[in-house]
Image (cartoon, rainbow, N blue to C red; front, side, top):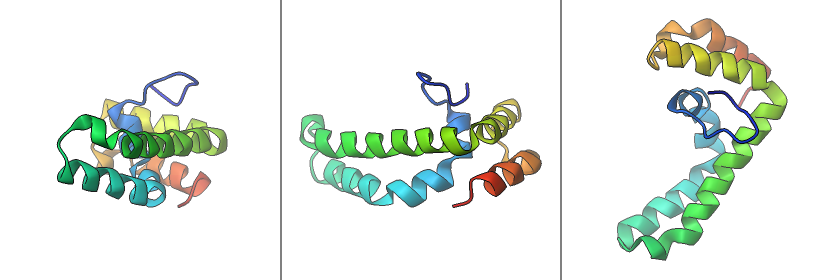
Amino acid sequence: MGLGDHDVPTSSVLFAVHKHLQQRCAGKTAAFLACKKSDQDPEKCLKEGAAMTGCMVEVLRDLKGKCGDETNAYAACLDYRSNQFEKCRAEQQAFESKCPL
């Protein structure tokens, strides 16, 4: 469930790190969405999709190195609490203190 070497991030991990993803990958995400909006052919947007995915993988690796335990604890709380942020404020505080934006 957490930030392992080969894990696919769960929704809880993505919810936990969403502010980091939004801040650091906004341009690549916008380019991908603009491409998809202008052309529904999936093949036309492979480059933009790969760039967006690469950015997200880079952010996840960076957070794993800097604050993996805090990220995993926050994600585990969100998983247990059905992604209800208000029930995981202590874990969120620990994560944001160790890995601020």
